[in-house]
Structure formats: structure tokens, C-alpha cells
Length: 237
Ligand SMILES: [Ca+2]
Ligand SMILES: [Ca+2]
Image 1: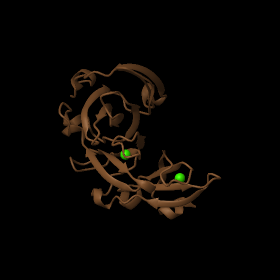
Image 2: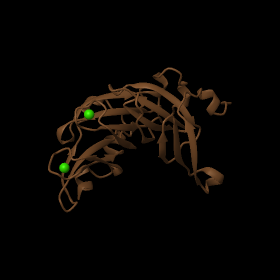
Image 3: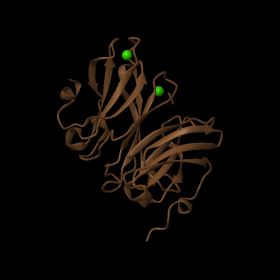
Image 4: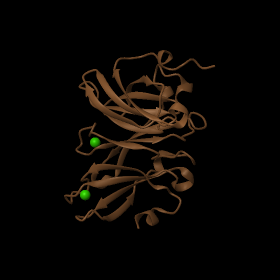
């Protein structure tokens, strides 16, 4: 089985995303995450499928050059983006909520540029607190949930990214660097965009901890204009 090839204890399958047919055999391929691989540094695998849908090849993405720390949990969640640099291959947004470069468990988001066969060609690392306007303490475990939010004319890609208690909206440039990060909601949970219409998005947000753990799913229409973080989050004690 593929999971055995990936190594025991890797949590192979902690995330899965379709990336289209990157090895040109006519069959769409997969990226699979294993967030606990290598002392929880985390890893991603490119999985080539056969005509019957069974996996025929498994190749780990070469992430040695990213400098992941133990417990970074790279691949905890990730999403396929459009081809933001126009080279014909899609990009990935990959959360590493345990990344400690900005402090223990501060987290980070990686934008990975893919090439033929799903190889990693370049990358950008994003720290929410390094983007102007984002308070540092509002980005704990940044990258714990990552979801594609669609595209608008002036941005190459728009992403929803959660931290511990918070959901952020990132606007990406063609370089993979963020143009801006906006506060969206003080809720963090499962996320989906139901509709993205001009400057207004309708989000579907899971709140598993609501009502004493009963949990619920809510829909919220959001205007995609800058909202000061202090207006969204309750004040910290
Ligand atoms: Ca293929
Ligand atoms: Ca590309």
C-alpha cells in the first residue's frame, strides 16, 4: 500500500488535493499530505493514478530546501491554486501551522510552484504577522486550514487561511507573495466558499466548538474590503 511506502506514523492522507494531469499520461494526479512525517516536519507526495484509479507511482516532493523545523506539520492542510505564474502548471498553498520561525507554533503558509511531473520548482513562505496591518498575536498556528477562495481581476489568487481563533483572507500576487491580508472572521473551522461575486463572498464555516461542542455550520456574506483586525476580534484581555 502507498501508506507503507510513505512510512509508518507519517499520517499519510492527512490531506488530499487534485492537481490535474502533471505527468501527461491523460489521467489526473493527486497530491497527498503526511503531516507527521519526519518528526512532524510534514511532507507531500505526488501520486500518479492508473486508468483504473489505482495508484501507480508515489514520489515525495523534495522539500529539503525549505528548512522545515521538527513539528512544523507542513501539509497539515493545503489547496490547489490556479496557475498563478502562467507556466502551465498549478500552484499549491500549503499550511505549516507548527512552523516556529516567528516563535513556537506561530505557523506559516507556503506557496509551492509545481512543474512537470509535480516537481517543486520554487516557493514562497508567508508569515501573516509580516504583512502590514496584521497584529502578531492574531496568527497563532497560521496555516491550520487552507482553502481556495477564487480569483478576482486584480489578484492572481485569493485564499482563506485559518489560525487558532481566526480566519484570514489572503490576496496573492503573481510572484506568490501576498498583496494584502484581511481580517475575515473571528471564527476558525472548516471553510468553503459558496459564492464569490465581485467584492462579496459567501462563506460556509464550520464551528465545531459552538454551543458547548454541539457544533454548527453557518453561512456568512462578507464584503472583500479591508476590515481592521481590531474590528473583527474581541479585544484580548
Ligand atoms: Ca497523470
Ligand atoms: Ca504555475
